[in-house]
Length: 407
Length: 229
Image 1 (spheres, rainbow over the protein chains, first blue to last red):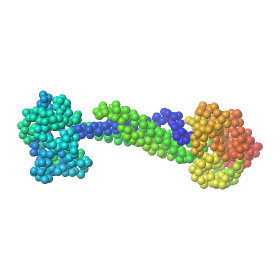
Image 2: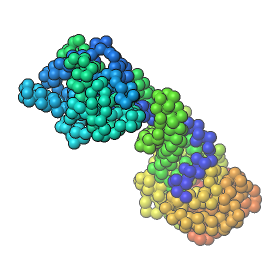
Image 3: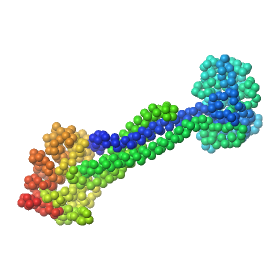
């Protein structure tokens, strides 16, 4: 016989009292866990989408939209290529990479593809040396969190078109195939192909990204301009800020610099989902508040009632030698068990709800986040123990002479 | 063992001060078997509470051996009750959600007796009171007499030096009453101190010493006076 056995036996004796006293905490935790699970996964989805979209700022023709761009609109308006140099010359803080692109319809071995011209990063360096020493030295932004802005080994491979949205070196007669194009055309590295009347060698094939880039063929910008006879224009200029904060600051500066262009952040494309995330995040704080206030008050009231109905039992325990501290611990342990059990069941219930409803609420698949569930159990237990503190303290102050009172 | 020195206990009820107990000098020696009789409201339970360290006197001192009981902390008084005293209640005060065995284990648990030892001692004590086949029964599953025997087992399982009993035979049939009184006789023979508050004059006759309480005032009793009270 010890404190735990006493508490456990009492709880087992009154199962409905246990349910009614902890139902508010259970439901609060369930709602909190469900909302947080969906929110976290939705935020991860937004982050994944932003990552797959690549550049965090796009400079587009005035009338173009983000949707046009990501749908690889090949017949839209264009921008003068000189805007690229204007951006670089301006020396704006936070600019990490600038990649001008021109998209054209083309045929590759009978397959309709989007031919996208990109300007390799090495040509910026060459132009910098030719024009001015300070032409393109990426300027660090105070809020930057990325570890390094220097070109990495990966930047020299075609795959960097996926990872950094830019390529260090690309010959004027070389192309890089998107994953879908490579699969459907059956061309591979080293093959020679013909497009828009020009001959190219396949430099490499990109891995699958699940974006429109999978159906692109990348070639040198100036080759594409020459073959398509467009002149020195681009469809878009992708600007990679050194971090999201920098991207936010850069938009007004770029808009000011290029008044005839449209400057947008790619985060705008997931604006609705970001809004939903914010709403859910706010709601989860609200639910946490409800859990603390309603769950705590409900449990405090149940424990206080329990103390009242067990006055003689408490008196008897004190008469046979229980200290006030023991009596206080008796009720605190009861609250702790109730909080932990309600928190655990609430977490499981919340997780199940999130897994079922997540795809419908936010269009995201939800997987269990053990850390979050543990945190919720911890919060429920803490709320229960704090709520039970005063009734437990009152119990410890009861007069032991209550043991002599008749029923 | 016990010495009450100019002890009084008063209550304020509806603005009036009521003296529940007034005692200039009362001594109870170790090993004495004392019965306290008196009408309802005469202060019997107040005396028991004072002796048990559960109700501080308004004035005076209560000594237990060489220590003034109420000059010690609440925790120290709990320890005295836990280690040296055993209580018997009129309504048994068993914990309803515990079995007979678990009820008897409670004082052992409070004294930090190891769990396996608790079970052995509690089971042995219940067997002594003829309840070996009721170990896992809850109070609601036992008769009144059986409940009082469980309560007695709980009182005696820690082998207390002092037994404080509040109307221990008040709710019992003659057979169960005899079991309780026989247990007290045995405890007395073992040298334990017993203070029994009772309305049962025949039970009081079995005690070695009788005290009469009338309007909060204690006096030594004789069989004749007991009948008057």
